Length: 615
Image (cartoon, rainbow, N blue to C red; front, side, top):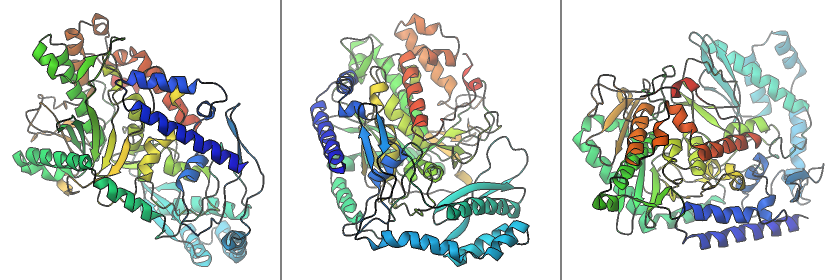
């Protein structure tokens, strides 16, 4: 049975590769989507149609490798894939243990030893309140020889007053967050939660998890794994690709040019993201953003507060400004200006598409926050692993005041005073499905997808995390999406750094943005969502950023006038203009429902108040 599954999988990926080669010559996203639709609707017996998308178990199994010559202490349960009913059933109720694997045979004995080594007197004292929770947890760590540390996190929800938050980390696994009015209370609360959950995991015998409920036990991966060597060889080869060196160089030159004019803001460029357009003759930087924070203010009702100022978010909103300029060139009716635009009309629709010789790349000098920052070697305890703990790593994340928090860690209060934004990893995943153009621009153009994501992080030697975050979490969704939309799979490569990671305390909350055609930089305070007084560019006394929602609605209306799209000018509010993009909204709803159904969590949505404004 396993052999049959392996052969089916090999045929499927071979087919996808051949399809990819044939698709290289396509000239529009519409052609790509049509082929994907035909593939997915080829019949119920099709291996593409049969996939119901990745579960946590499938992604973990795919990405957790074992060094040659070593065996896994625990193997995943057998899965029998039924392509007719789109389901994966557990084929066996027993662990499959290799006969020649000593570690696999000794692991249950080690677990029983742990249970026997716990003094009943210690547990009774803890239950009677005679031993402090933190002390009890440290004693258990010494007795059972596991690594323990307390990690400070962030408070979430509608909590009034000053609170501290900590979580216990046991063998690399983060347990539930505890809160208190001081650090001592917060650590005690975190220790109690960890003790309760950890002791329950020891009391129960390990049992198989259903494929829909969570992952199978993870194989342990020792440090210094030999399996990392091929990866380094691969990355060193990729670094020799001439184009992957031209792009970081172009970003570096543009950053130096901008910062040299305003050296006082050099330290606010620690985390950098940039969009680069490649043509047959050159690489041109068209949008840059820096930053590490989102606003701590309440939701703005007038659309003039920038809620998220993280680097890739600022760069993407700067890209939107560039795209609006290109649309104005196309609709100018001046032949010379039209020729300069990156857009051409599609022959069968009213929408515009990129010229065939243009591709867009994204450069980042750090891994985006969230699921992309999964450690290259997951060293999780195979007996305490649960769907909750894996979801914490691979699931959706939010950022609050610049700090990252898993959506599984607590219940978010939607009326909380602080603004909660989805993490950069999750937004990247969304843009790879819906396109980087957003809802408003989708009235004029087909989805804009990028060809590659280039990581210039000197501290990063493995892109497995971002591969999972951007690509694998949305495997199998294409057949559910409306026309023009698909899962576009960019190449993800390591490249040289274009800008050093440096940050001063005085400027750590500042965010920089620039788009091709701008006269100067704009500097935004990420915590307030407003332009700072010393910014080289300011829009007016209200200090609203040129990246805010109100500014985007103004450009949307200007393009609608130039394009003579009277139906779009009838939209009264920003929200109404977005809702009129029905295919985009349909695709967005499919995506958010898909990630929730596959166990990655619920997409946190800001209050609708922030979109019900008009110009």
